[in-house]
Image (cartoon, rainbow, N blue to C red; front, top):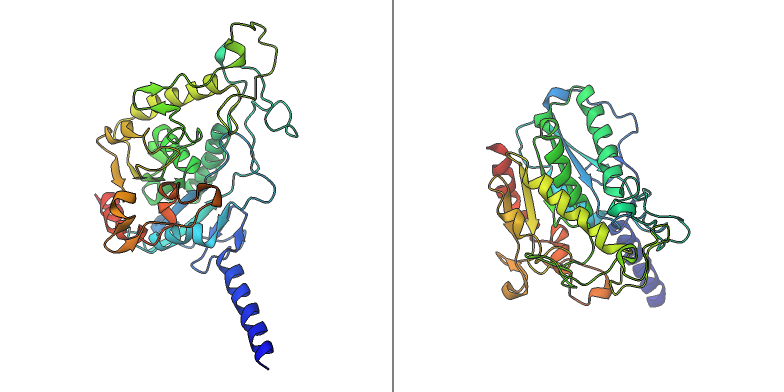
Amino acid sequence: MKKIFLHLLLIFACSAATAEIKCMNKSGFINEKFKYLKKNYKIDDPSNTLIFLFNHGGKGDRAAKKGDCPFWKQYIKNVVELSNEDFGAKKNLVYLVNTKPLWGDAYKDKKSKTKWLPFPGGKYPGKTKTEKKIDLTNEIIDKFLALGIKPYNIIISGHSCGGWLTLLYTARHPEKVRGGIAYHPACYGELSAYKIWTEEGMDDYLWDYNDHEESSNTSKTCDTKDRYKWEYACSRNYLKKRDIEISEIQGTKNLRIVVIHNDEDPYGGKTSGWLKNIKSINFIETPTSKENWKINGKSCKAKTSKQWYGYGYGHHVMKAKCMPEYFPQIVKYFQN
């Protein structure tokens, strides 16, 4: 009897764990129980409905692996909870945008994921994944506007690459949204962890095959054996795009963005000082290991990949227990 009880207890525990990490892999509206609403969900009172558009993090310029989950409950829990706050509309809805399948055009062969096309003249060959994500997001927002949703009632948000997209979209289309929430915005790899980029600029750490003195033949593919362990072959020319995008964001008047940042974020921790200098941005600095990752007794640690062994908490505060501590500040910013 005892064995049966333990077996049932194990089944219950596994079922609870599965429910907690349930993967949501489509674009669409969700409810507070983390279930998708009907595909053709009708918004009854569009002029009094506020939409939180959320973009997940990603793989920079390439598509995610087949088994990667764009949204799971713990990842979007705080996004859903924030949507329950009073932003001045009668009804708030959360819309998830899945861009996992998209590829940047720099990949010569999707089966060989590290072989990039050359960058003739230093220019990216086609559209980046970020640009394609912005196009898709814009199509979705245009549909909302056509339904009668007011631009004032659309808040775009996103984590990591989704946070970077939030910065760029709000800079390009300020007339279509009230503003954005960028959680740990970064989409060019672990620039901070590897000291590839500092506040003074890009470190001379990477080299581009097309620029190498031993080869002037730009028809060749880029070297994939540089010391930067992630995906960025043709690194130097690809990372130049970051400077261009930063200039575009900085040049926007009255950029209405809340930025959630952490100094120990391995992606953008030490490389985001330029955002602090934009006066219209509400820059929220979250606790680091110096503060024991806590604010008001609430932990800012969140479960993360085993590869970090504790390093990398700073990139995941948006899903930590402490995140609701910042909700009043976020709400107040968007009410002004």
